Image (cartoon, rainbow, N blue to C red; front, side):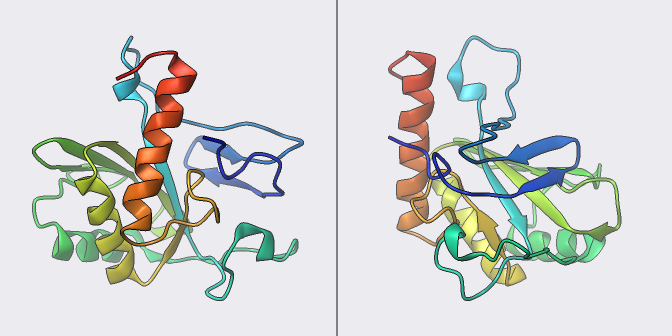
Length: 177
């Protein structure tokens, strides 16, 4: 699998201490990787921010596009909890959503005025559906380096992108998991 960002123009965005600079000339990808010998510690990272509603691929985003704020962190957390009441945001800058065989960490950052956040997804395909439901509730779009368009899309595309990412992760790690 060839990641969606390979050879494409992209823009750099700060995500609360993580980098997201993707593109042919500056190939840096940030994965939330815990110290572990298992690639299961690597996450599928979905970057949420203000994105043009009419763009169908990342190439359609104007070079001078500047994302705006997406809302107050506390209000975003409240909407996430409407979808997933068990979501743990005891530390508002870093939430956790857990299912039987999947997990999603939500990196919200330290600022109350939120310009973007990141989902760090691990486990089964069910997690992709949770991300889709949250984004739908928030009326937001997200960047998905594993999807051909560069955008996160709702199921079944989301599940397929997650599966492609897992295949890519396993190839890069040189393991068949």
